Every structure is written in structure tokens, then in C-alpha cells.
Image 1: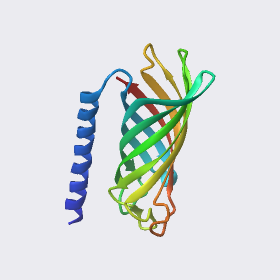
Image 2: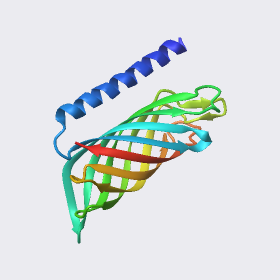
Image 3: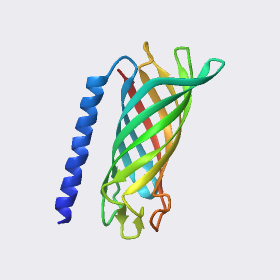
Image 4: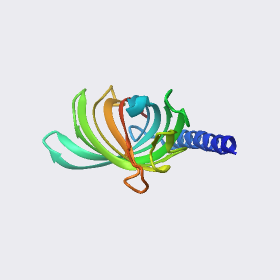
Length: 187
């Protein structure tokens, strides 16, 4: 029974990745949509690989000199892996995160800082018999720094610290932290 449930979840995650990829390609216009790949490590020796689609609707505000705030939307699917899990060595994650980015508006290198908070759904909240995240519904908060560059400013690279927890919906609620490096290409 558990294998069928895990197979269904894996198939659902693959379907969402495919749908997000097609949607990004179909709707992409210059510098409005991007694809993102990230990798990192978290608490309890959990490694994470993340694929994302970013949408920049060009919503900017509050200019301070050559800097401004912008709103970015991101959708993610991720795979967690640990060799220490005696219940689940592999966990899938899917979610969305609105991001607020404070970025330099000109120059060949445009540094930025960013904050975001979103929701995640996990294929299982239990990693081991001694560690569970409460339930499959999680909140994700993150903070990061990076730089945008390229002839059309089509590349972004950066570092993000991410905290995932269920916000106390169900106990125990230890949460998990990740440090990630990412690279993004904007169409």
C-alpha cells in the first residue's frame, strides 16, 4: 500500500515538473520567466536538489537611488535525500513562494538581497523514526543574497537560507533548515 502511495506521489511530482516546464516555455518572454536550479544541505545531513520556475511581472516600487524593490513569483519542486533516514531516505517537495527582492537597477553586475515566504507540500513529513516535521503541509521562509548579470541580465546566482516548518500546526514541529546555492536563467 505504501509503495502505491509513494509511486502516486512521485508520478504527481513528475507531472507538476513537466507542466511547469511547458507553462514556462509557452509563456516566456524576454526577462519575465526563468528556470532555476539549486542544491544545498540541511539539518540532519539532508541534501536537497531544487528545480524552480521564476516569474518577474516587472512590479517595482520604492526607488532608493539606483536600487528598487521588485516582486517575483517562484514555483518549486525539490528532492530531499539522506542516508540517515530509517523511514524515508527520499522526500519530494512542491510549493510556491512570492519573493521581495531589493536590487540595483543598472550596471553589468546587479547585486540584490531577497526575502520570501511560501507554502510547501511534502511527500512525507517523516524522515526517520526519531525525526518528523509534523505533517506534509509546511511553510517555507527564506532569505538570500545574489547577483544578476549577463548581456541581457539573463543570469542570476545566489545563496539562500531556508527554514521549513509547519508553523506549529501539528507537534512535534522541529522544522528543518537548508543552505542552498542557485543559478537561474531568464528567457
